[in-house]
Structures are given as C-alpha cells and as structure tokens.
Image (cartoon, rainbow, N blue to C red; front, top):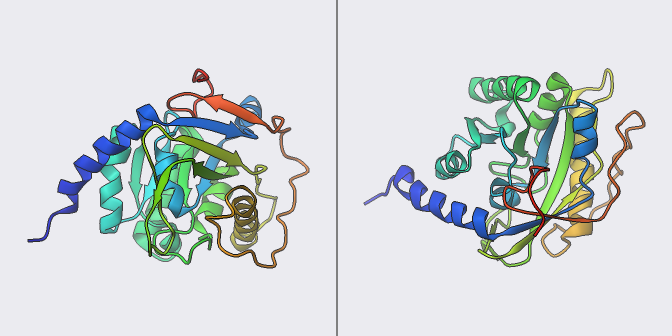
Length: 252
C-alpha cells in the first residue's frame, strides 16, 4: 500500500522542529546587518542538499519556494511548523511554466513587501550545483541582493546515492553558515548573466568551505565584485542561538 506524502510529512515536521531547538548555528561573514541598514532586500541562495539546515535556521517572515513534486510535499508541513511561508513552484521552470512563473511572482511580492525568500537554486532534480534562473529573475525583479550561503553541519547524515548528496543535520549538532559577498543585480544585466555570477560564487563558496561535500573543482570564472554594494560585516565566527538567521538571537 502506497503511503501518502501528507501522512509522512507530519513526523518529518516533528523531527525538523527537534533539530531547530537542539542545533546551534555559527555564522561566518554575515552581510545582513549592513543590507538591513541600507534598506536593501535580500534573498537566500542555497544548494538543494542544504535545505534542512537552512530551514531550521530561517529568520521570521521568510518565504521558500518548494517543489510541486512529492518530495516538496514532505517539506511543506515542516516549513509551516517552522513559520516559513511555503510557495509551491520550481526554479527549474520559473520561466517555462505557469506554476513556476506564478511562484516567482508571489516571491517577488513577498521580498518587496514582507521579508526575505530562500531558494534551493539547483533543485528539484539537478544537476547538482547548476543554478536555475529563478533566483536571478527574482533578484532583478525585486531589486534584492543575492546571498549565497553554504551550511555545514558538524554531525549529519548524507543520503547515499542522492543526486544532490542531501544532508540531514543530527540533533545537538553545530551548523556553520558561510556567506559569500552579496551579489547585486547590475543595471541592464540579463537573467542569464546574473545567473552565471550566482552559480560561480556559490560553487566557489562550497569548494572553499565544505570541500568534502562539493563536486570536484572545475575551471570557473570568479564572480565579479559589486563595487556599488553595501559594506560587509568583517569576516569571522558569530555564534547564534535558536532561529539564528534573526540578528536578535542570543549567542550560545
């Protein structure tokens, strides 16, 4: 007998909540205080493999694009339990299907008026590390900075054979969140040009901060800097508490 994803989703939501309250986050090179001070909206760009670690540390008023597949259904209840607004769609089909385009439209309104959004940019089916254009379209339309983030749980399970090498943090683990320099859309820049910059930055960040998880390095053109971007917070370790994307969380 086939079990409905909705039935499985509730136990998953309970486990994710346990992770949220027992895992500790340490943030490295956090640019968000400067972006907030400048009044600049931002969107999180993560790898599909890092979805659980990202979800358990979302800041308030975050929206997430969730695949319309059965796998996505498993995440919806978990996101709801965490207070994340789940928007069904796919960055893979953001410009080629009504569902994908509608999801990006909803995210644009959310980022402009409510809070940040988070997208697993190489989902839902890969190839691993290949950034889809949805994140670039969202950033351009909402004039938001793209924050590439790689999350590295100290203790984790890695799903053997999964195309993305999916990671599940274990309770009581520390999770290190590494930020790249914010990527700002340039005036007149097309979606594909911005997409390439996001991809180059994200892959370089993972190769540097989580080399055991990363794909073998390839020859890449480094993502150009944003000379007009806001100043960055000095790099370093910033211990954060529960719901640690929020800047007001107490240190452990």
